[in-house]
Image 1: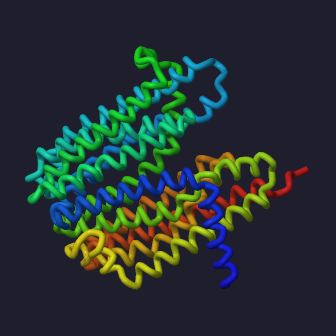
Image 2 (image 1 turned 180 degrees about the vertical axis):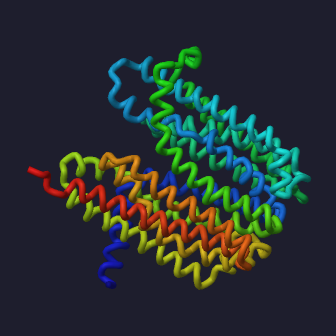
Image 3 (image 1 turned 180 degrees about the horizontal axis):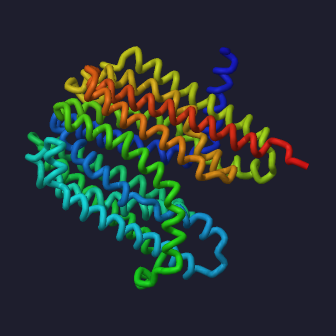
Length: 437
């Protein structure tokens, strides 16, 4: 057993070395995002920060339309098309304009229902700040699409620069505000978010337009609209799951508990995402490695490599989980301030999902490499629906409160892992079983 654990650690560090550039960029970006949450939490305290989380949760529901993936079609199209640079540019521009249309529609819907939303979220006093947050929602969706187009087109330097600048700007603004602003308010912090989103999106758009003539923005390809929208159907299932598991649970907490509870839940969720993001930062090269093995029909080697990588990230994240379990309160006090130390039971619960993430974070890459992208849909549904329904039940019919919602989220993660493993075995059996004569 000890030998297997040592091998798992060695494997993780080898993977880190092999993926150093992508891993370093990913870790830096996620660390900046986690720092943004820590600064906002320290400046506002649990209650006021919880109000901002409630605003974000309200807009999160409109990701069902605004975050629809209009880029999933591009990687293969850009790789195989022989129609020249203008055809590739037209595909990218069409993808971007569709995103602008969808995001604009979702912002309009969000503002239309905003009076109902702020009342349900119990943040009626922040109606103006909630309306202002629409700019953050729209700009972050636009920036994400520009980044995904850059990644699909292979403009990795532009993609890296956009991510790093986009992560540094809000941290710098919040750090400056923390020094100069004695009494920050939720509305003021939302204003800083708008400034940060505007600056980072403007920088990303500047990088994007360096690859295109500005007049190409007026020449989308209508023939590509249908295939672009069809290609986004599968990823939409993952968006639905994330909305239910993330923003859905936060909505339930906002509607039934003091905002301070949502604030503590929010920072613990952010810390959990950062830990798993760092542990899983070594995954990027897996798709190309496994695609080559799948193309060579060497599925036995693919399965061995898959299991070895699984064990490596599970071992690393399991070690972090054990350390956090021993002292969650000092960690929260150090990162977010004394007011958030009461979230230590939540941190212990969320930490249980880190090993699950270490085991499950590889399936998506493997199924895509083997040519089965739709297989990612059932696991995401198996995660989001139970997590939301059990959170609702725990809040309404038990005395577990927010901890019950956290437990439901961990259970959803376990369902996600089990369904992924089931699908992986089906696909692997299909590829390794002898063909009938």
